[in-house]
Amino acid sequence: MTRFLASLVFGLLATTALAASSSLQMVGEARLNVMFFSVYDSRLYTEDGRYQQDQRPLRLEIEYLRKIKAKALVEQTDAEWDHLQVAHERRDAWLKELTALWPDVGKNDVIALELDADNRSTFYFNGEKLGMMEDADFGAYFVAIWLSPDTSRPALRAALLGGL
Image (cartoon, rainbow, N blue to C red; front, top):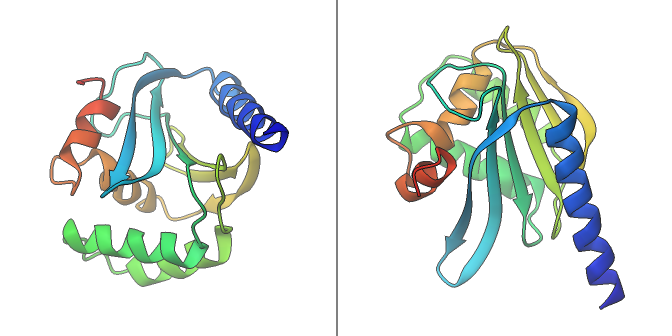
């Protein structure tokens, strides 16, 4: 129980510190459940706490509620891009970069993406910078997984956008 509480407190502190450090306001939050399993909690932040397409800066946080291998995260990203019919010429290169960048995650780990005004993408893991995706096109395609009207999870999108 003590380990659980310490992990929970760390996760909350990391999430709060990440949001505060970027001075962004929460737009909305959502939990992804698949069948009977809770997979992650997600939170979307913008400067004014409202979302408009292509708005920057923007921060998307995913707090995992279970262990997931990095390879599975990348495979799911690829599957979501299939759903969205992403045909970008650098898609395979992005997936390779994500494979090299992302760690395996466990309960209460947080992966966050920040998109700056120049559409540069910076990933963080539990508050520590993981690295950047230099391609300016990447960020828009990545957040589309959650924010596109054509997302595979419309209820999750609505909650992230503050609609639920």
